[in-house]
Image: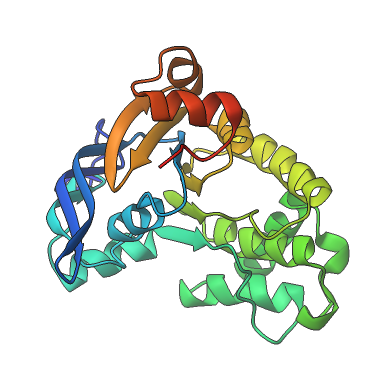
Length: 252
């Protein structure tokens, strides 16, 4: 929303001259990044490229210099960062679930946002149906498989109707069949929603199948940005070409 509360036409998140340092080392140095409204944007690159650090900086979880705007407004103060986090949600590689039922976990995210009563039940049921886990509603955390637990994490995040969903390697710990099934469902779900998605992965198959746009990182810097087809057919560097063509990490 703009300063007057009206929708803006620009990206939902934009960053300029974003730098993250760990001690004396620069781990992210990005001149410009933009996440468009409603798009699935994948941060792709080898392990250690700075993908997760960039995601955390954009989510207000990592200290960074430079300028970040969320929904057309600058993110400068702790109050701004709290506002950003209230309108976003995140899912990580490990499913961090409470020691309660599937329903209780999905409800927990909504309760944080002040949702109660009939609305709590309706939105929880909708999220469970969306992820195909309504039949698990009363199962406790200890009785879930890894894939089921990750579906609960995604349901909890989407139930809050976030403007941006941050996904940090959400399928890296899953076996291939479970990963393929979840990816297919996420592709369907994202096509139905207006939520923007920022997805961190080093998996070229995930990027090819899921991304509207890809940003390729090397050593904390953006080396290419475009559709996956553009990156595949016109790689900016030999390392990018090797990575996207072979699905291997570039040689040192």
